[in-house]
Image 1 (tube, rainbow, N blue to C red):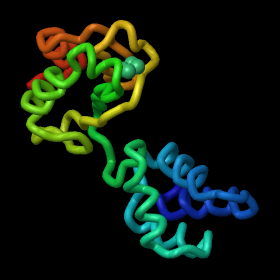
Image 2 (image 1 turned 90 degrees about the vertical axis):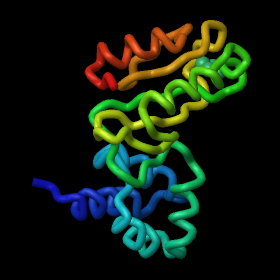
Image 3 (image 1 turned 45 degrees about the horizontal axis):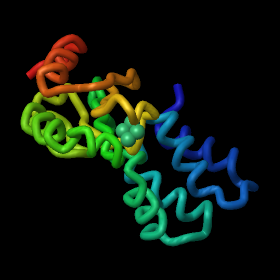
Length: 155
Ligand code: FES
């Protein structure tokens, strides 16, 4: 069985000759492990001959990268302009309150991780969310509650 360390080593090996490899490496590690573990940072820095701060800076710059494993369910709320114009801010307030956490956080019961996403491609029918990678349009606060309950992440 592959350990996280050997998974990271395999990714670094595969990208050893890739120019501008930082983002492909981070994507590959997150695809394999679900997040970028803290102990991967020095390994990436050594492999790319950059500082740990530089690697950390890239990880924290992109909302896509997780530094902690996600919960069983991942709720993404679209924060892009068209959804905001269609009432996403009010929905975000409700989602935060309902889950008891902010973006990049996990609900206290550990069931749901909340993440922002910048456009799910259905801009005319927002506000849009995705739960476990399935998109939902025209999400009202009541619809959010029902969707959350249906996925088993109910509060
Ligand atoms: S702006 Fe939200 S789906 Fe495009």
